[in-house]
Amino acid sequence: NGFAMVADESNKRLLAAQQKSLGKKIQAQRDAANEIKKKVEGMTLELIKKVGASGKLFGTVTNAELSKELENRGVVVERRLIHLDAPIKGLGVFTAKAKIFQDIEATFKVKVAIDPKQAEELKLAQEEALKAAEARKKAAAEAKAAGETATPAAEMTEEQRLKAEVDKLLRS
Image 1 (cartoon, rainbow, N blue to C red):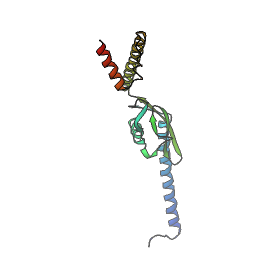
Image 2: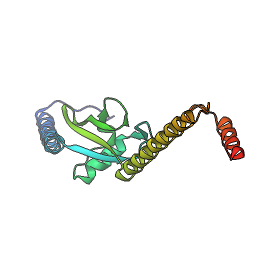
Image 3: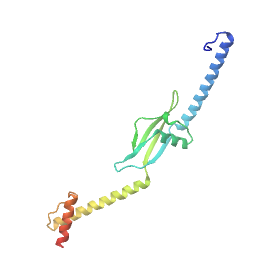
């Protein structure tokens, strides 16, 4: 059926030539993998992401994103060959590995930072919240000094706050 060959001298030489050719091909691939490792090793990829108020990302950083970022830097590594120790779901610096060839791995860093526009918005919102809290404290201190027995606005429910405002308006 053509699955076997006679083990004569010509067939042995043909097999040896094929093995030698295959060895050269594997060595060429190994050399190319070492070149890629030199480029990737120690590289730091910086990704800008949007985050929630708690500092957690909306979603996760995926292998496909990392592969695309590496490709933008001139290194082609398939996404399935990139390994993360744990999913990246927050801000910070993380370590990733790329298995380039059988026994050749490259380690690189992934730095996830907040979008600068969003950081400014969060900072402004935080400052406004601090100002509002100070205003509530000041109002509570004034009410206490005036002899009113009002609970601080932060401790009131929405209904109680509305009732207090109505009472205040009716007294005026």
